[in-house]
Image (tube, rainbow over all chains, first blue to last red; front, side, top):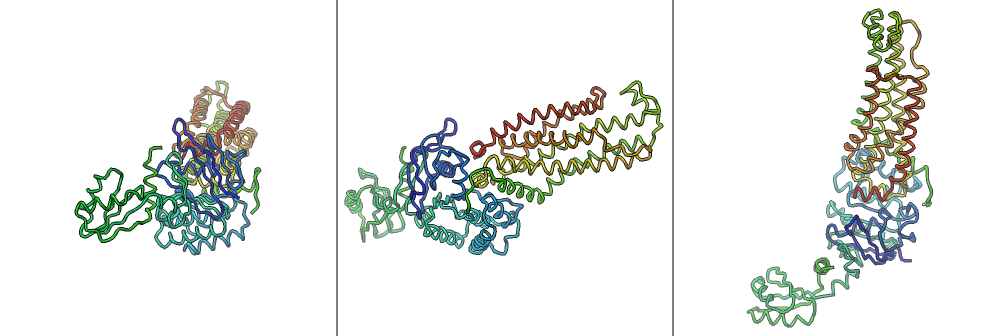
Length: 306
Length: 269
């Protein structure tokens, strides 16, 4: 059963359209990336899908609950978890009290919740500090506690806004491991992130949003559209980059020492690139076709005129 | 996990529990809350003590004549003590208005300020449950403070007024009715104003300042009474209570209508 199905979702604030034309589906066990620049409408999208904002147009279904909501949306919020961009914890309360509050709001069994919370706290190296006020926590500790709070009621769909923001590499790895495990358990995760390396590691599909839906695609599909040509030359590759400007098609160069990476939209352009380089005196050792970095595909999509 | 879609008192109590816990650990707010009752007890007790200390002072008779030309010299001190205790109830009413303003502003606008509102609204709690929980968390301490202050006022005034030899002055019928019926109506009013304002601004101090303006009419009334322009009494305060009851009904209607998730999110986010 599809966990999230959005069809033509749109949200406006007064005359400003925050986001429109959102149509996508997310399945159980999938880690789905929601990408876009700041102000692109990612947070608004998540708020609509968690029932915090009512769409002005379009419909959706999340965990079997139709949107726009016909009631207060309590059932929806019992089935989804939301990690907000800011941890949003009560500073004067301890970690245990923060978690107890949300357990009570979800009307959870105290003994079961305590055991689950303890497991996560241990995993995120917070065990032993659960009775300290959260105000004394570091940024990373707060973020980890907010993640525990998001997972405490074992939601079917989990929305994570920048989950590894402010975390050290070891903690970030732990969070990624937990995300992968939750997906393996059949839970659905939606990851909003600017960290494309993390998206590449975790997600199978992404939606690129910039006030409108630019694209929904699998990561492999995105990376294999277009082409990255890696040309290794003798000497500094930077001297050869201007030669590509004379070509009648777009060939974006990226120089790394003696390596020239050229982004192309079509394989047909590759021979012309090699020819232009040779004509400008390049001594080429090797030419390799590589998958296009996600960053390139992403930037291309967000730079496109809607 | 059991799923409950209707109104749940368990979620209301969760909000009350968290807000009480937060309040208990907020020393600054606790000090602010306790300063006002301390003043409201000490000042009238001090005035009564001053009258009792020199009951035959001819100036007391002059003061009494200003308010009522028929007062005899021997009755001046009891007249003035009765007047100050009756008029002081208008000042006392500042407390049940102001304390909920302090707590509610902190509890609602403070959630926005500390960025805790979004996770809270993303939980299963409904807008009505949240509103009731926040209101109870503000009204219960406010009324508790009012009643503790009233008991302290009774004890203090009776101790200082004892030399007059007429037995305890407080509690009297007007004060019991006032503290039991009118003060809760005023507390409800203060809370309603603070909830409405807090739902629309992002800063708890701004919410307190704006809601605090609603205390000014009470200060004006008290000024009018002490200046001799208004004559307070049981009927006067009952009329005031009835007026506030009407305002409470309007505020409750507005709060239920305006305190919703979408409005809170879009005005804040």
